[in-house]
Image (cartoon, rainbow over all chains, first blue to last red; front, top):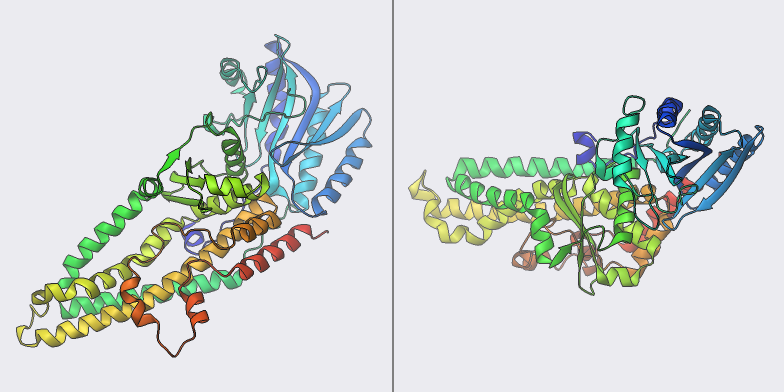
Length: 189
Length: 300
């Protein structure tokens, strides 16, 4: 926000940074050495705008992904008014998954809904058998770990430990207050 | 190619710029008059600027105190925090402090000198009246005020008007300061400065109020794009139907002192009301939100 934007009350919604997502496979390798197993599913979370325009975009993206072999697409809503598109790949191929997720978010961005993108997740199973998510924040262009620990609690110790593991591979969100608790995210409950 | 559905309203931006220029010109003129006629300017300027600065610097604390609002932690109001967390991430802005005031008045407000030192306050009254989506629309509107730095803009805009009002009210008690450069004509100098102050106060009052209305429209607009649901904000506005209290500090104080001057018989009451209001008429806000809604639903 520049000085004149403030003066004239012109806020522009920030645009999503899509390409950083392609750094995920590198982080996955690091996480695998620590005993985390990718489940092969990941999601894109965005603000569900009113009107049909974004639903049409979603339908198209869904068709596109469903046409690639081995990918299943599901859609769900959470109680915060956000929409989740979940892609599950039977072969748990992370690069393929990231490509699919990128197809979803780039079609949203192309249709002008880039500012509605909140986050994207890639889910894992921890060595202890619990769900674990690597979350990408579109507006910040950074990642953070999210480890739900039953109910609405999170395992902060594990999250901080993972931060060290992936710090070399992907940009980790430095501001801990941005590590949003995404309760009820698909694949993370 | 990635594009944005967000369209800034050129007309609104131009009007806001026009008002800003008008205020700036007025203030320079007023400063020049004060400087060339009296020594009062410096003293009054220091007092008023210190006052305005204090109001601006402590705006969040003062506003929360005056509403008896309590800052709440995520554990005390998890749903409210979850909502604001998500909005802040969507808008990529620092999260303000969150406060709740126990009052039936449906008037949320945002305050603070910068996005990093800001607070958003909701009342129990508004949480009872609105559903979650509507509350979110209102919060997005308030967060847009924070992102637009409206407290700062309005403080600067109203500070010299404050000075003019100060001289109008207290100038006569400090009459002996007038004319210290020319003792013979102190009476005339006093009269000139008094009348000029009164005029500046009146004009700046009208300009500041219109600036405030433009900022409201602007906040509606960005808030609606932030949630992607302008209609929810519309229904919230209809529900609380213009009862939204203004952001503290955004208007000139003590308007009663001048109101007799304003209510000139030549102008009818309705246009007076529109001219002095800090918020635009409900219909104008709803029309703008309907336009945003149409823009969001456009299909390629």
